[in-house]
Image (cartoon, rainbow, N blue to C red):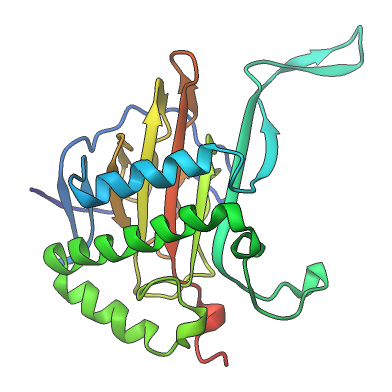
Length: 264
């Protein structure tokens, strides 16, 4: 595994900006070091049991058995003065589904924590089971490659009641279909933790994770795993470009929210 010492770069990227296309410069197994400490890693291809589980989870996610929230996004192609409307090109359907724990959202008139409603959908059972097993297999990889982070994250999550955990190291999971996120930082996450970001894709390019603070763009290859401290630096996802029929890029993400720490 390649070892990369991360160095801060000057940039003018701001939260909320669209992430443009960058060619990935991280395309092989890499351990990320910052200030003499391992902070994350990238595996281009996971194999064995975990790869089979990803295939199952992805198949279920693509089916009608798992409920998803829909959205449509497209880059504007200018304003058409004749019609008085904006013109769009390459409209892409984007979907997401959240499982595990949902934090309180007072602004949405829900001032209490809960478990995702997807857990009440019987047809989503196989998807949820596969995702829990993926989390367990991911734990083994984290323990092998970053044992100090594994032990620290276990300790941090020990303050979270087991009923709010999704696996041992997280509270929640979101799976995204064709979603390329604007620049953001996961401020709701517990500090000193990492996310698991698994990727499934076919007939597509793009969808790489760009971290401007370090000038890196991480390839999100099929069956890859990126372990990353999403709370720490702003990051965005480059545009996803289908290259053939049925082209897509799915990200299956596990994350730990601080809203559940010490919550009964």
